Length: 149
Image (tube, rainbow, N blue to C red):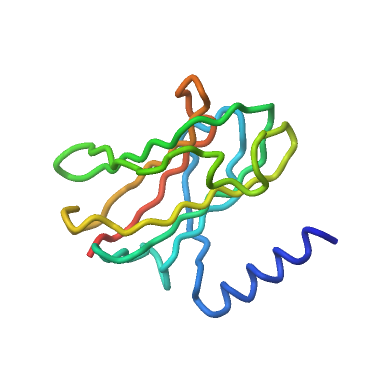
């Protein structure tokens, strides 16, 4: 019954366009299986994120082994090359539900919210988000497309 309440909440939020599940590509998850990615705000794909405004992303995953989470690494592939996007407060455990530790078989959601930096170039981006363990090895890796405006 505990899983029912979050599902109802997600359905209501999604109905009002507050969150949107997006298509994603697994780019090398090793110790967990990504089950969904959501971006806010997003009305249609590719999601349009506006510089200087708040945005959020959420990655839901199932752990396939016990994991000792570390930080997060975000990279953007642009026509001009690959750019690393700094993530302030990148400790995975501070943004994880349920809280750490990450145990094999458990279902978790990582959610991060921040203001999109003004200096980011506009255009269509391919974003790679890696949740890292304490050895800085990715245990979840997802790739999404977004439009920066």
